[in-house]
Length: 418
Image (cartoon, rainbow, N blue to C red):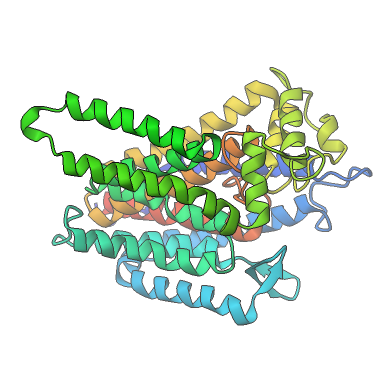
């Protein structure tokens, strides 16, 4: 079967889901950015026309990816990663600063956000590293290297500063978990997030008292032979120190706009006409759609321009207003189908690198999808994270296309070598 054509071994279900999401995204962008004179969808002077150009230029990228040998990603993974880090470093002397963030390169009328592409390089090199048969994520040294691969680009991105993009890289921890990372890391991360949130809502002394009660209950429910009072004492001291540090971090480390976004999330001391305006308008737009929506191009919140940047990070508000609950569920269903399909195909890989990369792709897409939608319904702080294949932008569309089709090529290559 080695001579089998690539087109015969491609997973066309993933391709169809990709194409469906891209087309739906384009029509939504057109609606979200439609001027009063109702310009043509193909007008290159409008946002929708530019998005069509980005879609058309994605086609040669797809052809190249599907044509070249998939082994190139194994062979040159560290080269791609090193080049990505250089691109991030190059932003500091050569990048363009927009809204306080230096995360774009500007070439005439063309802009490029390197962090979008560095996600791909990081996923590749992480998959390459974990594909070594000697690597065992139960080993602390191997864990340290894996987390180091993730944290190095994160550190450079945080210096821009771009917390939204940096957050996405930590989704790769889910792929590490699939490859054997102890679940204690996920539990520790989830616990730290929960304690941070609770420390903002509850007085530190009360939270520590609650933690003490829980630890005492856990201690006495544990078998006598396995009880270690010193361990529980250390855990309580650690929780106490962490809880008391939250207020300091919130007041002295976070930027003012980051504090505002957290306050907006919890409804604390915010002016809904200022720092809470975007989220408030987004919720009004989504809620006004009802069960079936107001109809395509009929969204009053969208047409009135009440939701800022609606064709980018807030694109889902247009879906909610014009397509309603039914349309929103349909879009979510398509994303879930794509994620499940990627994981299904990843599990069928004979190569550990291909399997790990498949889970990296699913993790990155899931984090973008989850954060983008939950921030609009007030379940997550507002961050600048695009909705994959939907939000306007060349860098994001090209990066998501490369990310997905590299896996599609890897998957097709596995079939050909069978």
